[in-house]
Length: 398
Image (cartoon, rainbow, N blue to C red):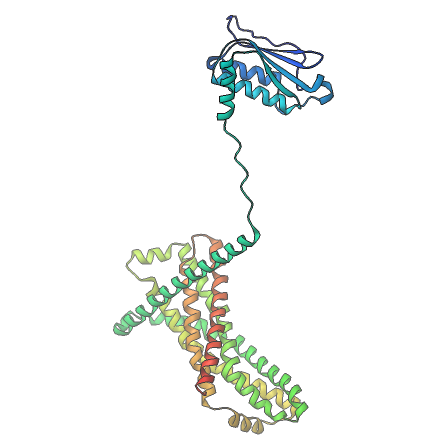
């Protein structure tokens, strides 16, 4: 039970040893305190309080006479702040058992001491207010915005370092590394031809197929040549190729350089006095700058070929009709627009991929996170820049 029914007294031989005695009366529980409740006896008193009123135990309310507890201070011989603190702890344990606690006896000085200790005892701090959903949402937006701006600033700084390294290489051609350049051209360009060609061919066929369904309603089926020519040369050829290379080569650049950072190979390059931008980044940027325009030209041809085959099958438009109409509907501007955009897209994809590779932390999880981030950022920036070019070239009459 929470309150013991037997008496507990001091066991020490000293006459001033503290004691705590519990007596059950008809109207209340009486707790008689005696001896010296001072600092030297604190451990003894605390142990007796714990044995008399153990933590976590509860005595049913109906077994407590009157639900009252009276603490008798008449037997005290001495009391200091430690003893007052222990008396207050005793009162707390009694109150926790549903008892109404009061005191009796003692000197006015002891009453003042008990009141002073009660006021000076540390109080439980008020609970902190919970987060306000709207403010938390605004805070999350702010943090994300700051992170994006910080990342964009670092990317611009890295782009400046790449440009400076490239300009330095123009004045010192021997610093340009041709073997890595050719290697990355083969990896990013030649090996991407099957997937680029297949997707471009299928997209060209789909554009003609869907366009023919709508143009047949107006008897203008021959205009599918105009549709596929302008769409592939100006937008689809370069955009599809750039997205493929962002997912294929951009992610590969991040993973390769990130693994080198993880294995401390980049630190080894710096230790040997080599610039990682010159050794690792510049060959990849130049390789993509050369191969993406070539892949764009290749994608344009496959896209137009797929469009013509679909026009031949579904509309019975032969090659001569298709090419004649294509020459009338398009100009060299349409082809040049795709090639011009490909150079900008190549730089974006390569720089973003290499940047995320170099900022990888020294753990495998970071490599995966930055690989994903590089693909997403590169595709996003490619589409934004493509939208800008679309408006720009339309404005200048191209």
